[in-house]
Each structure stands twice: as structure tokens, then as C-alpha cells.
Length: 175
Image 1: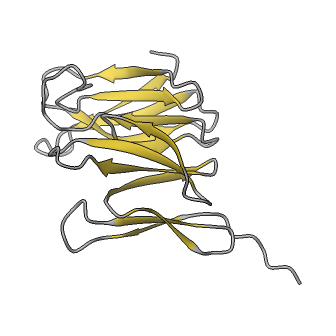
Image 2: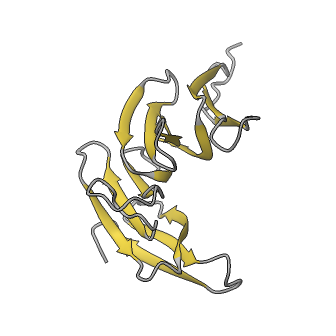
């Protein structure tokens, strides 16, 4: 009898050399592990046949890109610069992310304080900021996408102010 197909899933292994010395794997339909990256943060997502994860840029402290790969073959599909903490939409055509926190105030830096939430259509490359928080005391922390992919939710808070959080909902087309 035929074996049931196994849906791809993410496997993350923490490294011994620090936060970014960790590996992200996805498993193919036969259950074989396919290496996605050896230098990734433990923030990865899988949807629509794709895996998205944060990978640090070499020799640039705290700078990172989101890498999106085919979950079966491991081939790179997309790169989103100056980004981290990705969340793929269910169909794998869009991505929600935060800017990296390299703390440099230069033109290629989206947001040196990680106080914004961004949307990117992976197929067209169109991207836009969905929210920007002022002052730097509060920042986005968790994200979620509605089943129809039209709304996103994210919490805003700060670890210093326990139990003080706000939850925001935005349309991917803007507030």
C-alpha cells in the first residue's frame, strides 16, 4: 500500500555558538530533512510550500534579511532585505515582517528602532508599512494573519511594562 504523504514542516536546531549559530531545516514529503540555513534565528514560518526565516548578514551586527525558500527543494525563492520575524500568509504569496534592529540611521534602514510592521506581496515585490509606533518605548511583538489573508493582527508592548499591551488589527490594504 502507498505511504501517506507527509506535509513539509520546520525543524529548528539551536547551535552552540550563539543565537545565530542555529540551523533551520524543512522536511520534504518523504520526511527527509532539507537544510535551509545554518545561520538563522529561531523565528521561522512555513506556508504555501515555502519556508521563511531570518538570516543575519555577515559582518554587519544585528543586520538581517528574511530568506524565503521552497520547503521541498530548499531553493531560494525570495529575499527581503532589512527584515526579520517573518510570518507567511496561508497561501505563501505574502509575508508580514518587522524590520531588523541593526540600529543604524542610514537610508537603507527601514526602521532602526523596530517599531513598525510591514507587508510584502512576494509575487509582485510590492511592500508597505502597515503600522508605525512612536517614541520607541513600545514595539510590535507578535503577529497573526486572518484565514482570508485580508487582515493582520499584532500586539504592541514592552517587556518592562508587564501586562500593558495593545492589540492592533489592520487591513493589508492599509488601516
